[in-house]
Length: 424
Image (cartoon, rainbow, N blue to C red):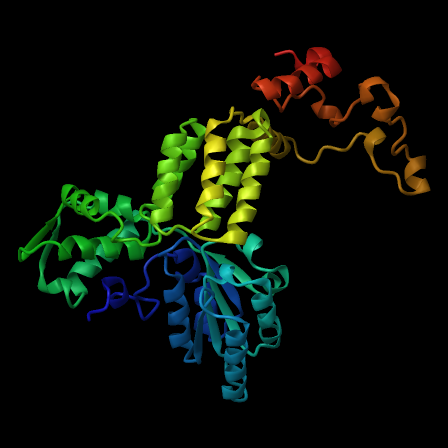
């Protein structure tokens, strides 16, 4: 059976590698390390299909060093230790450390990641990890501190067009067909910057045509994908478009549409943790103070999915989806923190007013730290007016209530506390 097009076209050298010029272009950081013949452990973070695995293989070939591969989906702690032992026994004096490539490293448990620490620190292996998730949340801090982090970007239009041209002119199968790229907008749109997805779509479209000459048009691409919508991406058709539709349906208070897009993601094989994470974000960003319980429910759904898995995990996800979609909406906290960040960037590090500074030492007390602070619990209603903002920013309003039933109560309390300051 013939290899898939994406595998047949996988680059073998940096000269054939498309995209990521900020990392492997002339004078870029990874290119310098590779040219010097020595690399340190690092993690590649980026969306699917941008060349993480390919880059690791190219580096191993260029350095002519043993290359071990583990998948975080199928490997356990024993597999990690076995590879490390083989790497240690097979290494000769002064030889470069073998490379251990771990795909989807974000799926490794804490114990699996812990088992890597000693080997990475002692240089028994050079670790190259690949992840589509933010390593700050998914990789343990001790391992992250031992690795450089390089961010890969979605491929740009020029990169994708270059890849298409290479496919139709150099691939051993496609070059036997007469393929004319008359229109490419649909190909590029559906690929979403993912090289693998782009080549899968191209292979699907060309494979469905019996004529010797294949003229690629936007209409043809759309028609073929509608006939076989999941064929080109078993990890979730039009991943970013679908999740966008899902979140917008929740924001727009349409539970039917939200459930539909949820079902599309489930059928497409989307990672349930990704869906749950987006629900937590939506609860904070779009429902917010209008219904603070939404965040609690979304977080509970996240926990439940991790505990029970599929297929039962679809139920708490659906429960949270309907609850969020039918809740009152407010983005006042979201707008408030963005306004605060903008003010901080505009005004710099303003000094903290003396009365609300911490005063753990006598010297600080002598300098007036904490002097004049009014303890709110000593006053009726547990409130008394005093200045909390820096001197230069007194009077700035950052939070503006949006007057949903739940948020109206918060607004009325602020009005009773601060009076004119909170009158809109």
